[in-house]
Length: 149
Image (cartoon, rainbow, N blue to C red):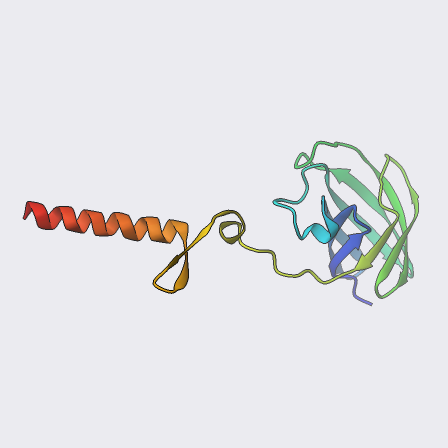
């Protein structure tokens, strides 16, 4: 069974797993909203990495927080692969928070530009404000050149 994919730990964070043979690697990032769908960025509270060895249904390895987030801890994890879409924590050191991971699908996140800027309606279709401002500046510059020429 290949564990590579995106996994969610409740509403606590997203984990991006990569299995290479009997090695398991991950990057974990905190989220503020379910699956991080409404978050501007992932990992502001904590961000961690993990490297472990898979032995049957068990995974043993080391984890460490990285300075993407505010928390900086480290320790060991003992995990159980309880199925193709479920991993459970059996033991931990260092204060690791997550206890259960479920495989998930991420929906595409909106572009920052679409999410935070207003759109203007020009000529019957929606345009991004920055596009409209750029076009207006180009028309002004063109008009100025005509007046001078």
